[in-house]
Amino acid sequence: MRGLSLLFLLAFSTCLLSAQTNVVVVADAAVESNLRAAKVLQHYLEEMTGGNLVDLRPFGTIQPHTTVVFIGYDPSLSTFGFHTPPALPEDGYFLEGKNGHFLIAGGGELGAEYGVYDLLERLGCRKYSPRDAFIPKVRALRLPDLSPTTAIPAFPYRELWYEPAFDEEWARWHKLKTNPKKNAEWGLFVHTFDKLCPAEEHFAKHPEYYSWNGAQYSPGQLCLSNDTVRQIVIASLRKLIEEKPAAQYWSVSQNDNFDYCKCPRCAASDAHYGGPAGTLLAFVNAVAAEFSDKTISTLAYQYTRKAPEGIRPADNVSICLCSIECNRGLPIAEGCTDFARDVDEWSQLTHNLMIWDYVVQFRSYISPFPNWSTLQPNLQLFHEHGVRMLFEQGSGHDRSEFSDRRAYLLAKLMWDPQANADSILLDFDRGITVRHNLLSRHTLMN
Image (tube, rainbow, N blue to C red; front, side, top):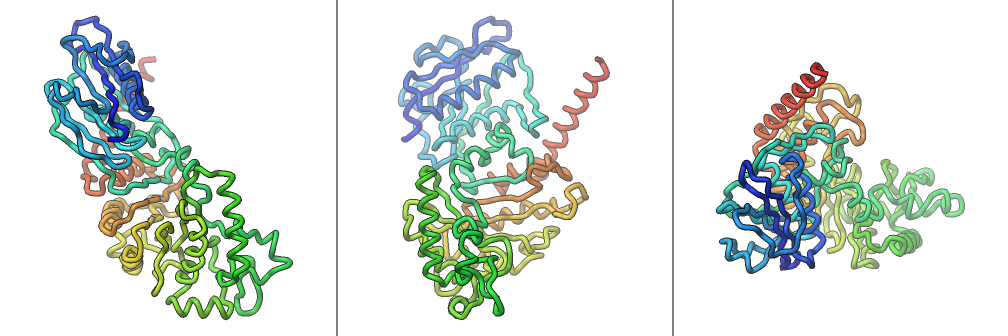
């Protein structure tokens, strides 16, 4: 199994009074993802045990009477009662605990590390916000018994637009897309028409490349029925891909306005496909055909939100469907039935569906916004329709009303929308209260 063929061991003494050094044993030819996971575990276990040394050593140096955490897998683990875990997708992980030992196996680049964070939470650790964490202090570690458990994310792509998620350590702990990773994966991200066919470069000489509103040309959007525009966009995109070849996702998407083209050819295309989304999709499909090894993303947003008729996204086209018009005080299924319909219709056209969901009100970030009961039903709706990519837009870099609490809840539900939301919030509230009480006590004593 790729990424699981090498064995990493973490061994530490379970004797309360023993002075024996805690040991991490790692295979010499360690794959990077498992080695990184072992180092993360090493760091937190040293913090939990008050600085007891946790060394990385070659496999084969396990001492008697030790408790062992295996990170990765090797056939020799059968002597400890562990069997080969199932094949794991990207970000998925496998846990099992028995006889004082524990196995973590991960899929892809981050699965093993995510499994480490799961174990740490089972040991009582919490990362409530970038400012609030709880790492219990123990004299001896006792690993939990756990029947074989496979954890696979409900949404393979999980991005959260709240201030805590911009902290890479917090985001990794909560199994979210980090900003460095996103910046590596995305070459262009939404509202890209003006980047691919800049109005400042072309509009003066060729206004026909842009939107005709019935009276005049406007640089607001592109004329998607113009063959020259398509060639300009393809050439621009090819140049950008050559500059950043490792990026997988490239957005070819409308600018952030309603000024779409209504020239006779675009209007006829809109009528043929049942709306502007079809004209956009025909254009994007033609561009995507030139870049079969890349994922070309486009928006189903505002005037292109409704699914088209008689056309499907190409296999390498991803649709980003946006809920900006919805009443965020009610679950989508109740308060925004037209968007629920759009989710259903787009999900029938493509398996490459991304949802851009809005979970904040923009008038005042600090004003009360009691939409707590909408978050889980909406994520469950998206999961039921096979959504693979999820972008939850909160207040971005700005702190906002209960933003740490919302981020904590959303991160957990984006991994598993069936999790108990009340228990998650109770865990957060109790932990924050205890931590702040301890800080206040420490301040008074000093």
